[in-house]
Every structure is written in C-alpha cells, then in structure tokens.
Length: 88
Image (cartoon, rainbow, N blue to C red; front, side, top):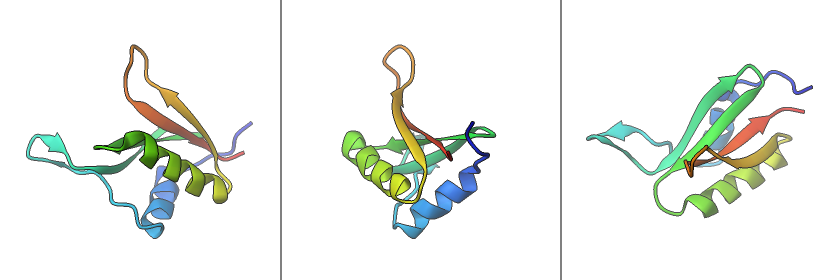
C-alpha cells in the first residue's frame, strides 16, 4: 500500500527543480505546473500550456529520480492528461 503523500512536498521538489507554476489570471491559466492533492496517498500533477506531453515527461523523470511512483493517466472522455504521483 502506498504511503501518505502531501502536495506541498511535490510542489517544493518541483520548485527546487526550477519549474514555474500556473496561476489563474485574466480568466485563463498561465503556462506552468499545477499540483493537486487527490487523497491522502495521491497527488495529481498537471501541465497548463503548450508542450504538455514533453513537460509531463520531464516532470515524471524528476519525480521518479526522487523516489516517487508516477503514472501518466488521462481524465475520462478525452479530458486532461495528468500524473498520478504516489510514494511506494
């Protein structure tokens, strides 16, 4: 069973690796990473902006190098791609 994980820890790792974070301004999201707590044992990571596939691949490699388990999924009905991040 996966261990508990906090979005703040994933966010801090991505900040330390130099990623910009998306902010909602002017009615739209700025390009960047967004981290969301999906439950006590899962965090979801999204990329807002162009180059989504490449950016998610880069973030996946960084998270895995730090010991996280990462699975790329897509929301239902052709929705957004996201990384489901857990701690084994």
